[in-house]
Length: 322
Length: 287
Image (cartoon, rainbow over all chains, first blue to last red; front, side):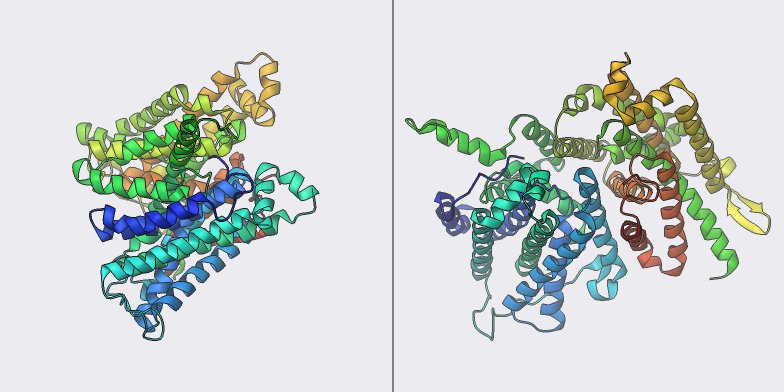
């Protein structure tokens, strides 16, 4: 729950770090599938971490936008024969639009009320999916989503490796966007709102409009992640729009830390790898995650990223802590 | 939809709505008193429903289950408050939400560990398994009993809040906890009492709902979502709001389930969005 660093730079050391990690992941991890899953959820967790770290908005509803992105892109690919890139783009845009519209309803409500509304909207998404079962396949989901070339017949995604290449590029683009926004004047205003809403208002900023814009941007990131999930899996299981995804994204964001644009990669990496390692050993490993979440909130606000950063500072002698 | 079906569905909705009221009133009360949002509130409902399941398996008696469910839920609430939650009162809302969310996750996983992830049926008690005639209408006896129990509890709760010293302290506390503690009242014991009461009410909702919907480990999360809708519709911190919100949501859900079965749950959230547009602070909320 630490805040995004003041006046974050673009690009900085973490930009190179993320690029290197994205290239290395498929070689370091046992399977490309695992690397792809990690990258998809890193973008989704970024959507949560951005809202909490930049604007101070805690959303239990980012899974809704993940789900919308997944379904919209799958329907475009499956029913309308779209190419991959436009389907992903429209999936992300649809989520951004939905997020903007919900933000108009929710953003006026302060604090706790806002959090409750995001959770309610996330539930609504699941029931909307069931109600629209002619389009969404209801509890069966959408199976057999094709993986056509990127655009105009160019750039085939035949193998899991090439698909990972696309997912990694998209994730890098999303990361650059968040880092760029964080370093921009827009980002400064968001931080001002997080620090003191009344003061930002008094300075003449339209706080409501800024919050709606930030929420729409975060929704778009969630939708992008959902569309990436569709490309990755080749089908849409109905659980992509369940409340459980929203919870998972919160957990990833908090564990990774919300203090830097690159932190969600750590959170998503931790969660995805733990799930892979532990789910066969002890299916109830989420209980440990619960205890870990409490420990992080009580004792280690910066999450894994914050912990690593303070370790890094301590190991570099002669530098004073900023 | 014929008039008969409509009346039946409205009656059904009142039953569901009373359960929603019991579920939400503790949440709204605790928020009103200490500005604390308990994301583990649904977990209390879950614990009580499973307690009801176990007791009815062991004894075959739903009456014991209805007593044990609230008791165990209150016990869990009090334990969580003593061990963990009271250390978070001074923290920002986000920290409280994340910690209570983690507690809910731990409870849910514990339930799966002890039982299994599968849904289970809880039998309706024998003496309530029949139907009753209300004028020309046929109605399941158990659902009628739910309405009766919930109405009695709602009345008792209202009396406690309006007519007892504890209730006066609770109401005063939701105006200003600082003032109440300056008057020499141990506010921390009041907080603990509110958690126990809120837990017991959520527990009663869970135990009453168990024979209607069965039990499964994710019902707590679903209940939390419903409770939030009720609180948003009714206005947070308001007893009457929780009652109105609960009944409205219950009736919408029940009536819509015969008009558009797939969309019944969706319409709950549609109702919430409408109320938000018309009255952003909720039906009984103070802006």
